[in-house]
Amino acid sequence: MLTEWSLHYPRWVIEDGYPDREVGETFEWFNVDFGAEPPLTKAGVRSKLAIPTADFGYNVTGEVACLSDEGCLLDFGLRAMGLRRDVAPDCREGDYVTGKIGISVEYGLIYLPEAVFDTLKCRFHVNRITADLTPFILHPDSHSFIRDESRIQYVDVKSTLELKAEDYILHCTEVR
Image (cartoon, rainbow, N blue to C red; front, top):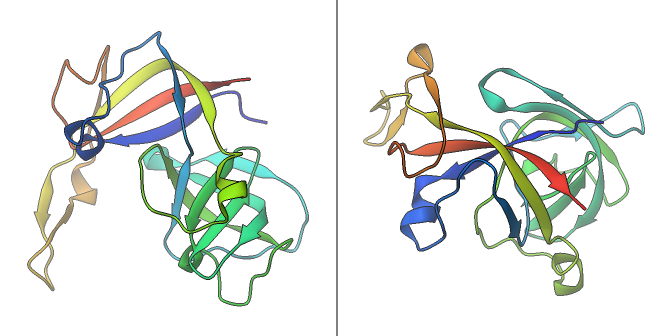
């Protein structure tokens, strides 16, 4: 199992009042979030696995530990919450799913039973921080901005205060 996780820590979380982070600190967070595009699909195996991919994502296989009308709890060696739409519509609690995800520490409203949510608090030690300097471009089909995937750029920093970026990757070890 992985010993270090790459957790996205968006600038907007800091701007909303949560602390800047620095290398060497240990922090507690109320949950880890995951997002999948396209949705995760049923797996042919019943195992928990996370393999790092480019751009700090993961190919995972994991168990759907809890499912509600709007939320999903996935256990792939780390327990993370996502939206119901992040898993295929035919998935049920107890199924194993597979696909590509990103994981983050942010504070989205995910609808899972309170008793489940209360079990998700975790502690992480920050080993390294990477600032995402990838520029944004206008989406060709809308008036929104998207990351320019042809110009992905990261730089290591000692703190999120050192360099302003839209997103940071906290390379962390889970502390039990």
